[in-house]
Length: 138
Image (cartoon, rainbow, N blue to C red; front, side, top):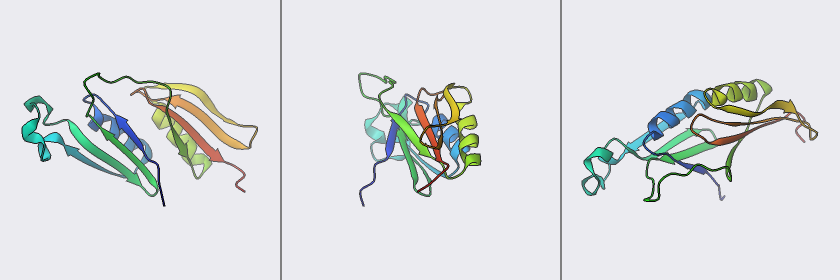
């Protein structure tokens, strides 16, 4: 089965951000630095501790990230959001509270016309999140 996963790019703070997401969402975090990789000798020495690739996994949740920014630099935008479908009302409330810490709660959790508990936020790293809990699953 084909699966689509989010892959985030950071500029030197990937380890910090992914550790924050792990504290918020739980799961297993695997980090590979440039210094631990076969490309270490081809990269500037100051990049040894930068994250080449990271994976946060919890059940079907897979969030990937890296510090590997192109020459044009990092530009955070609002054209992509991370959609988090929660299993319970308690889970969505906890995730919303944790992910919005240090960020901006752009739309508070509220019951929608389609019967879901829904809210939006921008986390402290500039990433946009949509949180959803279907109170009346079909």
